[in-house]
Image 1 (spheres, rainbow over the protein chains, first blue to last red):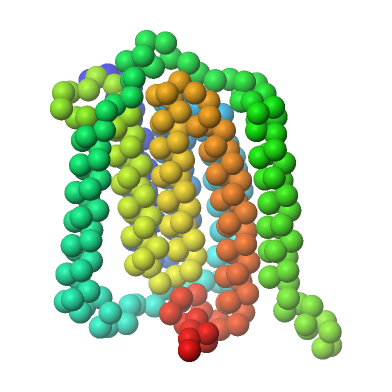
Image 2 (tube, one colour):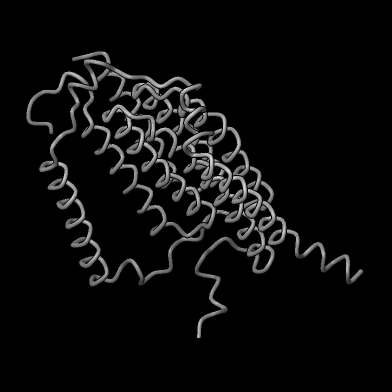
Length: 178
Length: 107
């Protein structure tokens, strides 16, 4: 087996294992920390795919900023443990049967699609691996995709204002009352 | 795809991994009863899609995949900020993170 394939399986195992634990965990703090682990596995896969720029962004922005925001909110709310599911919703046989059929159909469809798709020119890609440097990506971002880039900055501004409006309403009311 | 023993990780390897991660995220959104975990599962789904973008970009020899992932990460940040602000506002209202508790709008 190639070293590349070994690394792929190692990083894939990290990502899938950590993600499964994120969903199965009942304590949100552990969920957030495990999701950071999953992102590190994904960053390793991005390096394997010759995308070091995205790997670094993944660690700095996703794991470093967005997940810390999640952690901050979890601790701010002093999040209670999840309440157990009310009986009757998941226990009903009808729901289970429909869910199982849908899940099976989804899995079969996915397997069929992947089996029947022609693989892309993978051999070409490996004969002449093209890796894109950060300056390449930056130039395309500010030339071809300049409009999308500017639109994104407006999106972030709107999200920021929206978050402040949503989260600070109670404070404004309190100061008006007091 | 896996008909012959592949020497290197092929496109389909990455697509299957992406599908697995996306399915785990979907299951988390549908099964969990904690708003924070639901938002985390949405992040998992976004990351699964990012992985397939990067894989396609790599195997097609184009940098478009990396650029769209840059935008997806930005949108994910905006989504997380607004979602968490909503969670905080809802928590102040009913003191719980259980989505089943928010049913005041039911007719």
